[in-house]
Image (cartoon, rainbow, N blue to C red; front, side):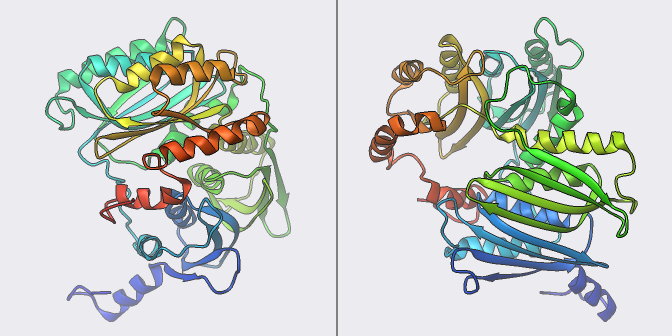
Length: 442
């Protein structure tokens, strides 16, 4: 660590104490890599550490968190998405550098782009209309994430001008984009709650999506469609003797689950003092000992009820049901508008989407159901694939009811598209590439 010439020894000591120290150990646990973090405690330090790990699509199998006095200590048991320990030195180095950097750069390569924030009432074909408007306004979609929950939609879309390749800064053009998108979002019955914001600010996409849906109060709304999966079980009880509120979350395990829960607790101004996270099979068990930032535990029944609702919503937003479709093809203008229009014309509803562009190649993921929220008919999926291109659009993950029938096709899809589609094992390196830390992720 290099020091500025004007710093005295006391200032250097303060910086050393406040800078997180990271140790990565592959020798202790036979099945996972241990990431140990200790630091002076500050609000958000746990979220920062979890965010670094989840941004690399790492799976957190266990975690032990303790914050005694003013010191924060944490141990994560992590693997890649294939369940393997971390051996890639570029990944290990990135984890160490990111957590140890007090002011870590969270731009994720979105500098030079214009961010569009959209919230409103979800409906069939809405995404198709949004992308059609952006194409008509000469906006090139570089990256986007779309979440739906309880009949609401939130989307963060990063665009640039199609002609110049520059961010959109002209005030008249920005006003036009906002007005056109607002008209699409409000439809016939959502005049008040539809919101469109254009921003040049860079933010962490998934944390911002949580904040947008929280501000939209999606957690208070009743689901339009019946859930076909088990709802997360959340309890909040007070440990009066120690002055903690004890939060327990039990649900189906998935990637980025811990991030979603910790993100919500942090943005609701709660501090995690102790926590234990463990997974068993496809189940996850999370226990947190929390207080509000003012040092007081949950103090009323309405607050307890609201916290339970918000944590359930945080778990459900990313747990999209439906068929996972991956599109990998050369990027072109109107691509997203054409693809999502095909979904709409075949009665498919997009419940979640992740859009990215790397080196003029579109790498997009869509989760789709039928118009009523039920499992899409395999014949419909096949018709959509025929229309878009069998080699471009592949079924990568089917609901459990499809698994026996889908296994041979999935194996074939990997064989045909293996040279083009990213495997799970390469997702970590792809993220490092997008962050500009390596020159190639192949």
